[in-house]
Image (cartoon, rainbow, N blue to C red; front, side, top):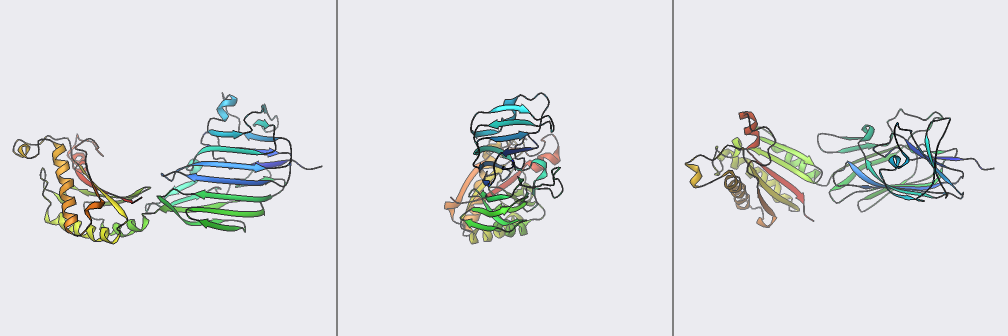
Length: 348
């Protein structure tokens, strides 16, 4: 007589701290595919397990006031699409018994749940599917099957164009394959799988170089879709003026040298102001902060083009005071809001 199988889905559902499934079968073949979103923090996850037997159970940690439909709120797809609900008297878990031995689901996952995902100051993502401590009462951890190991398992991450894998490893021997922007672990007769996945924006090389520009009035930030360089008004312009200062030109010249070496980057220059109205003298040239923020953006583009950066790579944006990053009620806050943001993204 064949023993029951327990199959753990690694608790990827944001609302559910624990979810696992079991089938009365052995020789489980499983696949899990993470379709990572552009923010690097979320994923669509497809999971399937194939067995020879006639039913499959999905186990959920019981929640007060939960109805059966609530346990499936983050499932976008479930096959089979119907089953019988019950509560296991020994564990207290809610159990959905599916009428087939094959199981498939598509789920929306928050990768940061239970601190599984960490992001360092340089924008590198570190994901671990196991915390290194938590185990089941029978000693299992990570991604597991019970009582026998996975006969075959494939564990894949599909990255969007703005992200790239850096390092990937498993605690058990297997074969890693990278095809384009997808990495896959293939394992045979393995169990209790712990995966460490590192990835970063494809603009990470540009970030490393541009980080050297940081100093008084310049901040460089790695974002999922590119790099943002923020320059304070005090560095670039006198208050209420769009003409670039000599100190500002020196910083922009250094920026231009980096941009010329990375011709694949598109460049957005965004002008921002505080909410203080333009004075009566300057109002003849800049009636409102819209005109001032636009003129500053355009003047920076002209300067970078004169330094040899192709003008076809640029886009000018002006936001006046509508995109504040601090309060306009204090001088310190208004000073932070008066800024230029340079947004660098990889060309499609």
